Length: 338
Image (tube, rainbow, N blue to C red; front, side, top):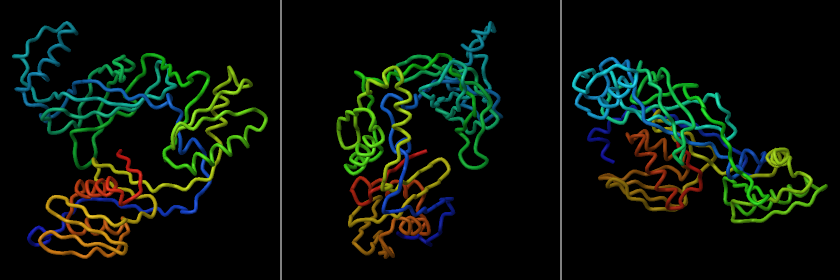
């Protein structure tokens, strides 16, 4: 890397936290590493309008935003035309949120709000009532409220704690032909085997029928003694403890330039090209070539990330390089984005 001609280090806030976990396995509850298929959180979204901005909203020439606020006012009985609207205090946004599969009408949930046009900031804005739909197009919630933006950094998105309200009872079908399906985070035969053995030990009093669908999914038949009381059966399953070797996880928060590595991750031999750079790793370390050749001290992912940071890489570049390594099979991790 050319050190940006003078090797200026960009002072980008990248938080790197390394938590070493027991590599030999630990006892964990099933609920922490698996989910019941059909009981996932429901993702909802909708189009909304934010008002009350301090001249940081969409350009007044944006017809969609102008038309949206005009329609809103007309629905309130205030007759206006788009030509009467010249304020930059409004902005079009996308509103998103997640609803529990057991939600009842009237329950609240947090929502995120993000600008979709050229607003410079949503700070101090108020989201007008917005209808939220699920993936099937059903209206399941509404959102409204004052937007909270980060104290520093990008302010074209924010959140409204408790700003969403469920408007219809959620009914999820998690029983299929008298069976429940359990999906594990890892596709490991050891995890499935440990679960099945422990499951049968925990339910010695009844016959348990388990079918392995693939390396991460099993289906379990509801025993006759639990018919009509499936929730208790599921609760007992999800509280079973099994021995589990934790897969290292990388949690990425691009909005706040945060990167958290959980576990000790080694980089296997690999060769990657990225933005004109060539990065190669052997069993003991690596090199990076970009005009000049740099020696990477070890093949530990945490040290490599620190190396990139110190040499002026932007957080988005670090994230992209890590993703390329995972795709190439050079690191065995789970990558999650907040």
